[in-house]
Length: 200
Image 1 (cartoon, rainbow, N blue to C red):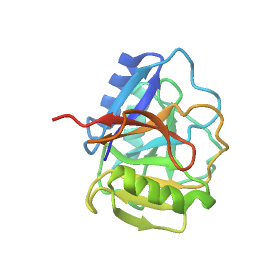
Image 2 (image 1 turned 90 degrees about the vertical axis):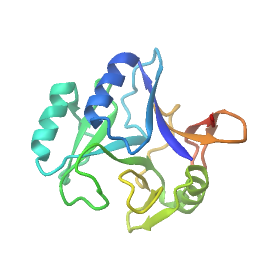
Image 3 (image 1 turned 30 degrees about the horizontal axis):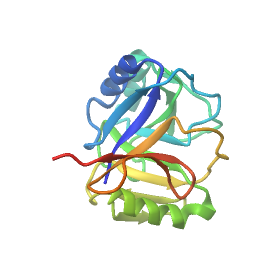
């Protein structure tokens, strides 16, 4: 089952505080786990990013996130109905405005977005349905949205464009298995993900 996101961090404590405050602790049960690294984020866009709900007063929410240490980011998005920001270490994330399709909460984490090339969509959908155990599927023209249950606030969103893979992903999904080997593996699109053993 998909249980969290692993994020490489130069300053684990600072990043933990930022994301706790940014999400208001509302992550739909997903654990954000920060692992130390000595390598700053490369200049390229991450292949996996997080989306937050802006809520009815999305402009105030963007201002709040900027006060927490986020910065505005330009990844070539153009004129879009959401705001692209970056966390204190440069990881891009989006703040979705009211009325954005698929947003089921007024605040907090609402999507884990994985870049998937058009030709990999079916393979990645099948792979992540099996690994995440999220089977509520919405097929859209732009891609696929998975949820644990139809009303769950957080979705796993997969769609293009997908930049060529260049180096290890800074953000990686984490799944929990009752059997199988723990460690780091590759999904059907060559993206790293973690497997953690189930406890209890």
